[in-house]
Image (tube, one colour):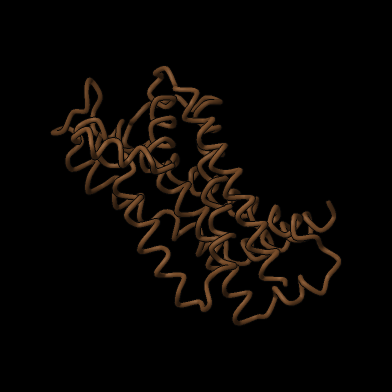
Amino acid sequence: MHGFIAVYLRELLILKYRLKRQLAGMAVSPLLYLVTFGYAMGDVIQIGEQSYLHFLIPGLVAMSSMTQAFSIATDINVARFYWNIFEEFQAAPITNLSYVAGEVLAGMTRALMAIVVILLLSLPFGVVLHYGPWFWLGIVCNSFVFSSLAVALAMLVKSHADQSLLTNFIITPMAFLGGTFFPVEKLPVWAQMLLSLLPLTHASRAIRASALGESVLWWDYVLLLSIGALCFWFALSSVNKARD
């Protein structure tokens, strides 16, 4: 437990040191999407009985919780390849489970901060959504999945440059195809089946349904938790191999 707290507090101290830059980075992309897609086309495009802004904001929440949680991989790689921090963890009396749990929770913390930023940015647009327990549970589940995946993949890459390849081939396509900017139901059946394999698709659906006051599908949460558990085990296994 003490090792877990130490790893987590280390990441929080780094985050505190970079807080202004981190918050600015968390705000830029969502603000651009809100202005260009939401504000400019919000009155033109209707998704069901809702404006496009009502559809877009929960999608941005799902996407940002994914990207910000996954961004912990970049810091892990910098610590591994440039600062040799991982070697210090290897020498310290910290279990692999504590290390993984601390890094995963740090990634989830970043994701939650990014969501607060998005919700604050959406206030001037006058969109009223429901931010109940199911809404936040969807964010926590989604960030758990991608923070765990980030730790796992960060242990597998051979150089810091490889990290951008993972982002380009995994995160970026999912960000645009996971039901964030358009309804997946509008696609052909075969495309819907393919996109249903993406965890972000289920996160977007769960977060959006809760935000719009609709009935949530409990299996979206079960699926996200199951994928998150698998990714966490994958992360632990990757750290075990890296330490060996």
